[in-house]
Image 1: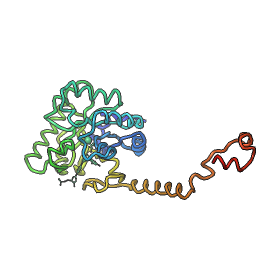
Image 2: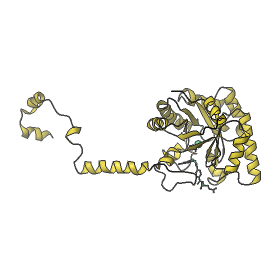
Image 3: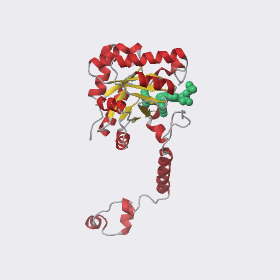
Image 4: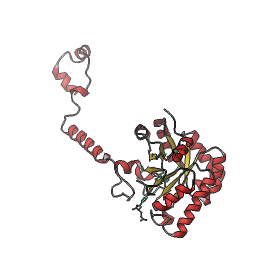
Length: 288
Ligand SMILES: Nc1nc(=O)c2c([nH]1)NC[C@@H]1CN(c3ccc(C(=O)N[C@@H](CCC(=O)O)C(=O)O)cc3)CN21
Ligand SMILES: CC(C)C(=O)C(=O)O
Ligand SMILES: [Mg+2]
């Protein structure tokens, strides 16, 4: 078992081996995605939406991220585990950002952190890299800015924003980021960015020409989410339906008294039963 490191991902880009990244938020899901072959596990702040039920990622705290990252890293032995810095944290002072990343790495055992943003947080990014924190950048659609943006909209569609995005990608590379997540941009633009920077570009809604792809666990498996189904998501299994079927059978068997059956129960030893009830069936039924 060889651990995935920043060097593994750099080599994958060089050799054009696609990088498979997916989110996970707890111990069993981390084990499953690792066993399924994922290279990178993202403890995304999307956990606020898919496991905590918030309607954006804004309410997610550093304490939430630490709590979930701890569970994920216990389940992942080979895959690289990256944790999102939650809303606002990357914009705090260098000291505060270093402390937050330090907690994710030291307390929660993350390999590194992901930050939404470019030039506005470049100082913080450099400080992290200088301190030895592997930094994954995140450009294009930045969900933590949803209120400012007015929705989860595709980014880089017009010439000036496309050119701006290319410049931002070069800046995060220069700041020392080891990889870049590019979210919801036209694939032609993602392709150009992939070609113009030497760090791996991992896309979500960024088309076919990235060095890797990332999706949210619950989207891939169709767990919860209801009507949330952006066009870039592909659903690979209907685990939500499977869970519902399993639980429905359990509920029906409890109500129909088919569960528990003989093989699920324990019994007193004959001696103890004799001692307590003297073999009398009436008293025995009396305590049941
Ligand atoms: N379950 C889940 N999956 C995600 O991928 C995800 C989250 N939650 N929460 C945090 C962010 C929010 N994300 C989103 C949410 C919605 C769209 C969306 O509806 N996009 C439109 C584009 C609209 C346009 O044309 O500009 C789409 O149809 O893809 C995209 C990304 C990605 N992240
Ligand atoms: C969608 C990915 C890139 C993310 O940031 C998250 O899951 O929070
Ligand atoms: Mg995120």
